[in-house]
Amino acid sequence: MVTTSEIQVEAETEELLEKKSVFFHLKTFWRQQPLGAIGGVIVLLMIAMAIFAPFLAPYDPELNAFEFMLVPPDWQFFLGTDQFGRDMLSRLIYGARTALFVGFTAAFIGAFTGLVLGVGSAYFGGKIDIIFQRIMDVFMAFPLIIMALAVVAVLGPGIENVIIAITIPFIPQCARVVRSTALSIREIPYIDAARALGYSHIRIILRHMAPNVMAPFLIMLTAFVGQAILLEASLSYLGLGVQEPTPAWGLMLQGGAEEYVESAPWVAIWPGIAISLAVFGFNLFGDAIRDMLDPRLRSQ
Image (cartoon, rainbow, N blue to C red; front, side):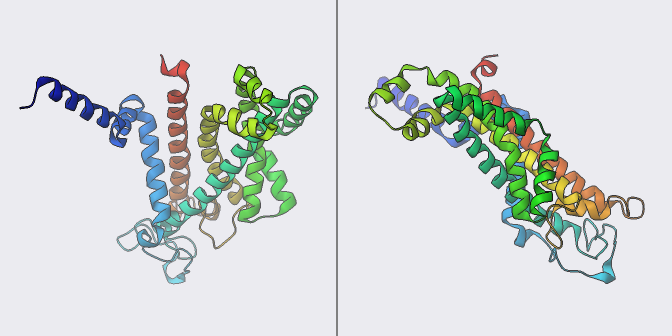
């Protein structure tokens, strides 16, 4: 015979398992951050589009079909074709691969490098911190796009050089934010205890300080992805980024923004919408992560 206490224990166990499930956390996130959830859906759709591009794209994105130049959207070409007869939908789908590859690579390298440098600067302090901060001030004196343009002008166009050009301006931004958090962590007694036990500086920085600045790091990382996508599109639009025939949203925008704005407006409209949605989605998702990880905002 099942007793009341056993039923109560079983109910509490089921409730605890439900709270630990992924669906429970997703439902909670959707309820607490509806705009962030919308941004997350946009990001997931973009990632899925990039992964399954060969199955979703109806045509080869690099195939020139001059007999179908500037065909308006119809049942054969759902989003129309460009000035070379290439299917716009296929190029948009494959362009998500370029945008995400550049965005995630540049954002992660820039944020991770800034994390290590920022925590190391706060940990050592003194003259090292002062010199490091003055160097960061020099980098931060230039706007993102100006710094990226300068780097690309030196290295030349190409997807690898674009990633380097976008990564460099991200490093001082993340380093400055992470350093401000790491300065308070440095004064906590367990850091002194780690020094007293003879742990190396690298171990203290990577194992005891870096994990405690993950909240601002994740926020910066998410924000950087959206900025990197926008910067890549800007550089490609100026002819300094990804080169033809690689599908890239900025490159597509360059090909139709001015010359075909009246005769074939879809050539510029679709890549512009794709860039806007991508940046919008990552910004919404990043703001939601910031609100959930910041205890001051979470308590409001």
